[in-house]
Image (cartoon, rainbow over all chains, first blue to last red; front, side):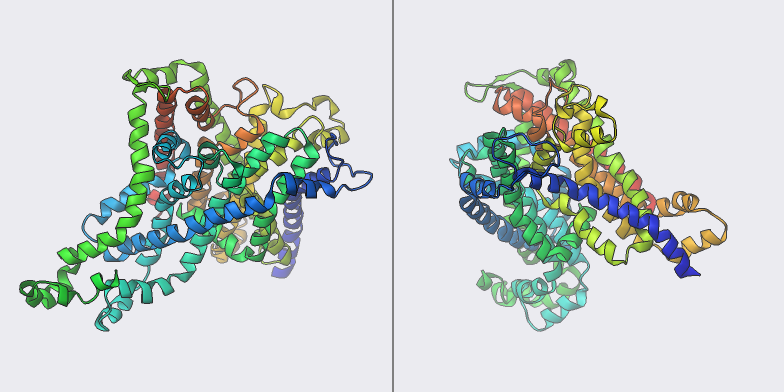
Length: 276
Length: 319
């Protein structure tokens, strides 16, 4: 009886699900097919070219200087993500566990930053970074991003440490562990699941950061991937097949990482929106 | 670093060390040393947060009372920039456009997401659903810039959307969707809806999977149809998840920048101008730093003013 109802209920569900997947995927397919048309032409909608022009991808790879772009985004991610994770975990540990006097106010100050739109502070950030002499360097993206990630990362890690039972700490204290040892040897290893989700989210947000890159860094080769894509569009926006090929190339690294770590990505994104 | 924090007994003065064992249990958190260690842990994050978030917020507020081109000395003009916000139509218009985008970024993905999630709930354990989960998240993984580029092409005169319309005999309404004064804003909204629909659907679906299946069986036994069950059982119980969807997407709408920068640059005219983009143009091309800052303050306040009540409604009387 119950299996009959689930099968019957399953058919409209399956149809809707497939439709939704088509709506999600068709834009990518259209861009992919367009990328195979002769460079510089105006293909229309989804129409297969007479012969696929794979060389568009080679050309896009060269004109976008993909190797240098990957390196630049990689450097930025490698600076931003570990530092943000380390200092937000320390702060989350302080707010969720050590709770020194004044930590309530500190926590509220961080929560206040959760909804802050980056456009709200981009103007002073520009003058600040300029006066630090860091304009047009990767530091101009790295340093502000670490600060901007603090509200989310700290709220995330604090939530984890609040959920940890106090017995763990007491046991470590009885063994004579200092706060620093307690943090590194006991709490951080136990926080691994929360940390890996946080790492995935910060990686994605850094890789896809656009506004900071276009305002603070002129040279596309010192930007994040999204910032570089913006410059690529500005330069090759009228050559549709080449633009499509370039956009797909710039997406490929994220897509590969996503497909490899899909489960972790999806759970991180779902939990991430709930907490934010 | 380790040297400083290890073995507090050695480092504390003898007088307090004697009193320590008793104090430790009751007021350890309040003791001077514990506070110091706690704040040392907070310090690096706080420094970054103050330097690159709190200080810029204060600077924005400060700039907003000046007339400044970024080069020559600034002149204090009081609230004049704020008066301009409500009197200059193109500035007020950008705020109104952001609210229109909420329909596309928030209401459509949340409402559609609810219906879709309820429909596919029965098969959420199937293989198809597993694949769908990976596919539906794709728009969340790619940069918004890429979504903008892809959809600019789809919505162009020769793009897929017009091709489909011609295919079903609606050739008469085809146009350059992003270049038309009346359709540009909804077209930009469609891009946002595409990006956010998958996220909302999966958030709501994960909420539904936590619901007790016996509730739905009970309502079926009482003779409630699928629609009735959806409206009177599923939706109220998903309050928290709906709240999350609305919060995330409303912020995305009010603070939108990337998609519009790529797809329309605010045009044609000012028909798709939003506060984020307007701030960018005012500050970095028109060199009206004071005015840009006043709009920035308005945007920050606006986001809080919209999000806090949403949080209150959806979380407040839940627990």
